[in-house]
Image (cartoon, rainbow, N blue to C red):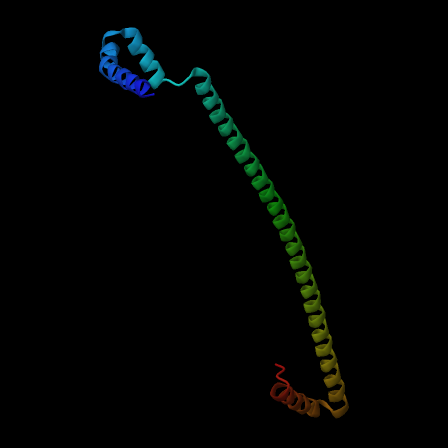
Length: 151
């Protein structure tokens, strides 16, 4: 056993001393050493590149899928907001029409009441005479302006 170890040690020393000189002097040894030390096996290199390209392709496909999903969500939201906007616009129009109808009804009622008051006052004035009518109108006007805020 001892002898095997001493042989290994001698071989090791010999390699350490002679190998650098052999690499320096022998181009074939130098080229083999460079090829072994610096360049990976072609199949391994191609496999690494193929894996890398596949990862890039998968990543791009995943990103495209995410963008498509996001675009679909944006389109759905836009459609929903457009529909909601149309509904609000319709409700706004309906409210305006309803408000206009109520306003017109009130104005018609006010005109009718005004006409009724004028007719009533005229009829009372006809009963009491022209002088009394003027006094009555003035008194009624004063009452309406002071107590009911009617101009």
